[in-house]
Length: 193
Image 1 (cartoon, helix red, strand yellow):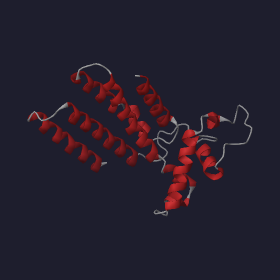
Image 2 (cartoon, rainbow, N blue to C red):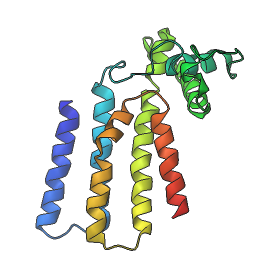
Image 3 (spheres, helix red, strand yellow):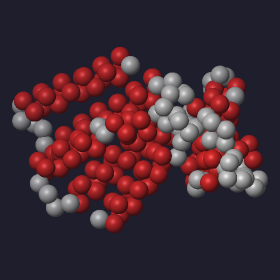
Image 4 (cartoon, rainbow, N blue to C red):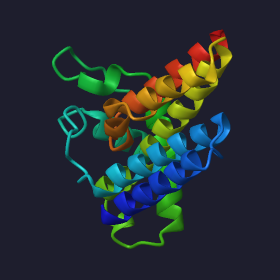
């Protein structure tokens, strides 16, 4: 945590120095905002335990079970579920397919023995994907805001608000399909603008 906080503090100091010497333009400000939020996402992801704030991930037939099924079988579940046991298996499969591929990649690389020792640890590594999705969400929000015909001075607060929105930090540490769903929603909004 200290490393992430130190990097963020250093970037804020650089930002303030640029502001003081009037060397801070719109593009530099946006770069710092996005980079600081990314360091925050990364810090949150690295220091939040795997099962914290995962309300629907580790339960029976939760997101973990769906991703591991795809990882083990590389197919959609072929079981007929009744209403009481389907839980997360009704979700679209894109996220679980990407997680299964990522888990296979990590298992193939195998550079860290504890990581490949269990499906649970491999699934835990999928947190990297969620962190990346949060980062890309901020990038596409920035692109969307730039498509609006407003002054740079009005865009900055909007970008700050969204780049440091608490839910994006939670998404950076989650292993369910919410971060990818949010990213795809933002991308589609950006394309509509």
